[in-house]
Length: 447
Image 1 (cartoon, helix red, strand yellow):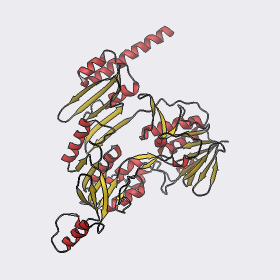
Image 2 (spheres, one colour):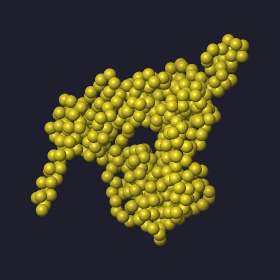
Image 3 (tube, one colour):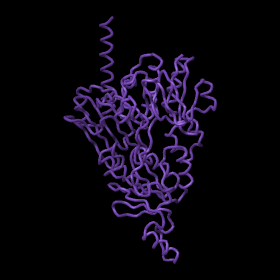
Image 4 (cartoon, helix red, strand yellow):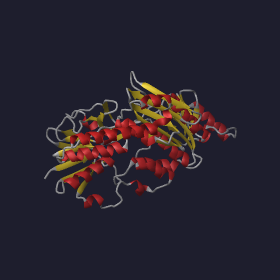
């Protein structure tokens, strides 16, 4: 009877445990998680902030006895060291777990920029349920909130904050919003949309410091002015002042740090497990150490569209990686078809998408269509669409993803799309039909 140890109690860890149990009813399974709550989805936290769900609505499994019923042991601790050769994991509670197969599914954590004042109690990340509780206590209607970062995760958080009725300012160091997902035109359109919805946005700016009341002469003078009745709507009554590189000083009751995340793999330093940006895996999600696998936000897997390994921190990829890893852990050889950069974002009602190599490839061709309210950009390598992004273009989101992920050879339709990018659906249907006829012809010849 094998012992499967899973490090991480997020979606990847839970799906892996359930998959292993289904395939190996008598094997021993242990999940190690370092948070007090039952396994939950971080992607549900914005809905908690908005008020659409309660805390238990974030839980991945609703029954309190779900894991007990599956005979899955849960350990509350953090991995500190992995001994691949000795097949042992050393935990923060001083326990040492021996394993036959190990899955590293420790996810990612927020990056904290080195800014003076970043450790102030008014500064919060938005990553855990504990973070969410702190934010809800401060983000009351009318509260002044400054958010650092307008990437994919930042925009999701921004929408939840706006729904709480706060006075919101967003600061993004890039020259546009969602810079890792959108080009200048598309990112600018999202910024304009957000500002029209009442959110103040500064792009191309950094937060240089977060000053608490009384930490600067300016703060002291403002406070004195307020006490003497000469103050206005300024920083006099704000717990902190956020200072920007463009010279702006913004009073705030709450500061949200949403400047990106990185894989939780520090505990693998000194081990034999090879890591680049994340834990490097093969097509079976196995690492360079036999019997040790990785899945989810901490795993670096092969992207068939770009032709290189990537960390793709989105839940659908995490779920599929966990399933493939778990099957291989119980001896059922399974291949990961690949990961693709997939992002669909709703920003205060504006839908934007980004698939694959949206920036284009060397020697490739592109097609772009921009109107007052919509933007569509298609990128080609030969007759294959390798990437695209869109703003306000909701008709063919599934088609765009299908063409990119399927690496469909468009033939003559590539030139038609360069001439008129709106013909995506017709191109998809035509090529799907042609490939179906070709497949049928091949079946006939085989018979």
